[in-house]
Length: 513
Image (spheres, rainbow, N blue to C red):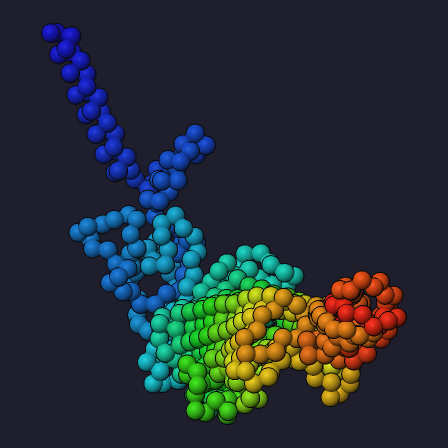
């Protein structure tokens, strides 16, 4: 009995010790500091309770919001709190007062809110200067080392449009070159009625820089860019690793997104259209402008819709990729082009899993072009245009074509300037068509009868008019005779097989261009 009482008393003493220890830890003062590695993960938890230092609180922010405040009656060390500020001027914090942008234990999260600079989120007044001031503060703030040669790493600084709609009267440009790792996001920019007709709402270019790359890792995200039929939306010049993500671009008259030089610009999850429509627009024949121009190398457009423009995508550089792109910008009968490869002689483009909707693909002198797993609707087709008569390393395979029984070929040649004469490694095969004519570089045909000469005409199936490079044939005589036979001619995609006597036979021919 006594032993049981002692055991119960020991358990009570142990429980009280745990409670006192937990209470002491909860009341731990930020003034206490630990050194050495023996504290392990506890040091990370304690760091969460420390008061931020001056360096940690270097941030520009918008006036405080109740969302970010915590009530004095119910303090929480892990919640966001606010410091007092005068609206609408931005305030830099240089004190130990907590910021809505900095958690305890986190360093230098810098986000510049354009409304704090006086930008009008209703779009009633001009916000150009306010937004440019926010951008200037952001890109001229502290950096941490370099990225590519001459480019300062800004550490992921953000210019936040606060979900507003802003009228701007001139392009938004970064005031200095050589900056990287920054983002502009979260709102709408609309060109004013006096915006330059040849300008771009966001212009990542510089006329004074001698750097190899002007900017690196600039992200434009969650934006609606309305050019108001005054020029274009985004221009990226000689920049590296630019990301344009989840943007809606409309009412451009020149180009929605223009990329010049540089490389590795990625455009994804975007919507572009000169006019806001969902197809079958009564004014479609008058659509103009180009949604995207890729004038550099190694760029990609993925999961993007182009719903109105004269041309969907113009490619003027090498090694670019289109994947999951839906073009219904302007129907081919109205003069529209979904994708225009204007890179004669060295195309190096991959178009995969795209949807060409009543508007097709045009490729000038294609060299290393791959088109596969794509869907062509409404008599849309691929046109190979001869500039110097070159087509080399072209794969058009495993696509689906759907038309209206108008006798349209799925792949066509434009030889108005010159005939295709330098043709190598061109494969058009394994495509299927409904209501359109199959064209291929590989074809097979069979004829039967009783004769000494058999002609197999493959001109309707073969793409090039007179370019057969190899022929295989078989002759199966159905009678008791064993005739001698030979391939006599291959002209204009017609293959002639002859025998030394008249026999009933079946002749099958397979050719490759």
